[in-house]
Amino acid sequence: MKRFAPRLALAAALILGASAALADPAEGLWKTKPDDNGNFGHVQVKTCGPAICGTLVKAFDGSGKEIKSPNVGKQIIWDMKAKGGGAYGDGKVWSPDRNKTYNSKMQLSGNGLAISGCVLGICRDGGTWTRVK
View 1 (tube, rainbow, N blue to C red):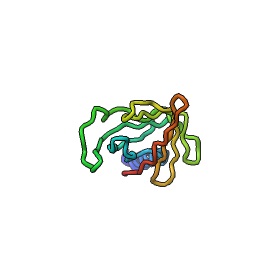
View 2: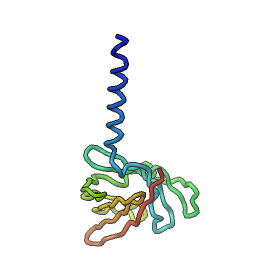
View 3: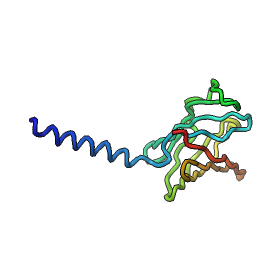
View 4: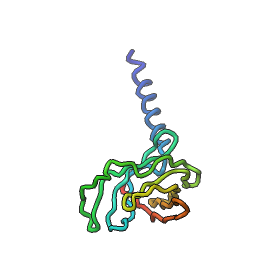
């Protein structure tokens, strides 16, 4: 039994390493651009099945002080699909300051995530979010 232990440890390490290597490059914690009220948030982006989603995990006022918000815990991004070359599309982004959901796309470039979307033919540039970690 002892001779199988190193093999088992190696297999576990390979499986864990492979799952980390398969992580989507957009995954992580992102600081949003300030909204119409000057507030911004931290959105945790992760894979959700075959798509990307993001949840607001913290909210801040214009001075950077953490604030309570009824939007913390709400999904901001959903159904976003990787298109290749850092592009994502066919997803939705909810804008809490306007309480609107946009048909959206994202473009990942280094530590920036450009967000844009349209609703009823009216488009909005959501600005570029910056990676927190």
